[in-house]
Length: 250
Image (tube, rainbow, N blue to C red):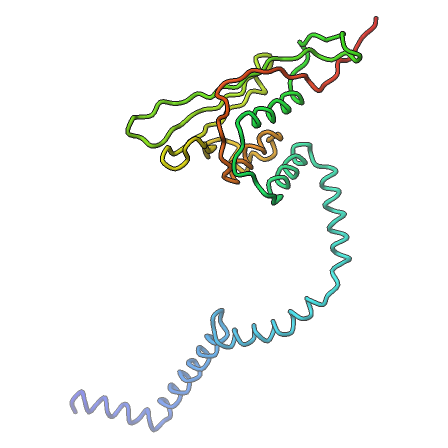
């Protein structure tokens, strides 16, 4: 008996004793199990059908549910968080709110107006420990401090159509209130109008908790694409501190 006949003989015997039917049945069961399992997997057809049925039942229920009780609880939690927050966190929220308020933005702003806004910030923050007191007015105040601004134009190649400059606001009495920002213009497009560049640290959202009102002004000028008109490139003025001196009559 050759090999081919031996194979035929074995298959014939297995067919007769039911072995082949058993194997086929087993594999058929496995195949059906796998097929049904695939239907129920993440992207299976039956899973999609079930999801749609769940949505049709759950969404209307959730939409009609009264969440007022939970909103009241959430509101009270937020209030407590704000009460316990540090001042810098409160400032972060206030600055974020100020930036998000939509208002009609001016297309241009004069540098002298930006200088006036900075002077108001100086009046709020300037160090007064070493300032003399003016007793000539009805109510004694600290004496004025001198402030100035200057636009420093950076030289660019003759072939370049881009100009760069730095605006410096300076108070000799208190360097901590000094400010500077860089501006840029395209000679061919902007003419005499300048734009604040993006390389200032105030444009990092993580710095929001540390910004003052003047910083927020600069940020809004930049995000609104407001053009800066250099009506002056140098100027001087004085600022009266907002803080009132504590008088001693001893």
